[in-house]
Image 1 (spheres, rainbow, N blue to C red):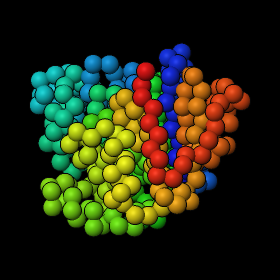
Image 2 (cartoon, helix red, strand yellow):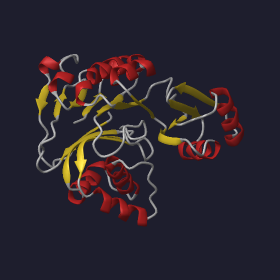
Image 3 (tube, helix red, strand yellow):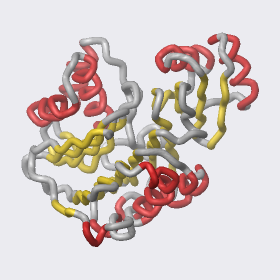
Image 4 (spheres, rainbow, N blue to C red):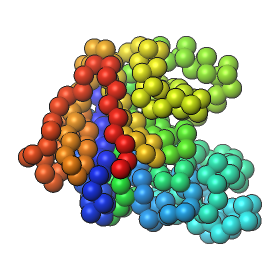
Length: 299
């Protein structure tokens, strides 16, 4: 079934409350996905400090000080490592792709689950509310956040199979539903050299969108192309370093509701996840139309 929540802040005064508000949204979606959860936060000064790249990974087997020392030696820059079991965050004043490559070389059996200048991605299995509090999500700040509660249908219950899938710089995608033709698209992408980290159908969608963005499409165009290419029932929330987008398939049987005010834009699988947001009583509230791409940009 799965639950999606996302919050895009327009008012900088709300930035210190991003994690608190997103946690409240996620708490109301636990019933839709009790298996595992993931979240991405844009702009938290501790998880992704200004002027530094951040890499998120699963499966790190080294103590944080040891990994930090190894990566500092590889990159020639001071590196900080934060252990948020099972997720590890690595950041430093290095190009994000270069930092990702250094992490992959230092911990080849670990799995990178996110990288960029703005975003930190956290994943784990178990009760989503407990995970959020263990990670410290209620204390997080920033300008945009996405979270997902998963009920596994297409692959095993693992932290790597949870959402969001972040396969391009500062890009994240979460998904409620299933793609029915994802294997043929996956094979096409593999023939073009794309490497996959999981058996999850959502990763296929994320890598397809990342490929379109890398080829020069904007986010709206990339999601329109996804609608033309993918079959199935789905609601997607896609975030980048400057955008927040929602799209649904032609049938739109997977629920979604959007609320918009001058201070924020929020999306969730159900209205109850939005009910506590400040100013909800005067928000414009609507259900996204089938196959229409909705995009909001960072101001």
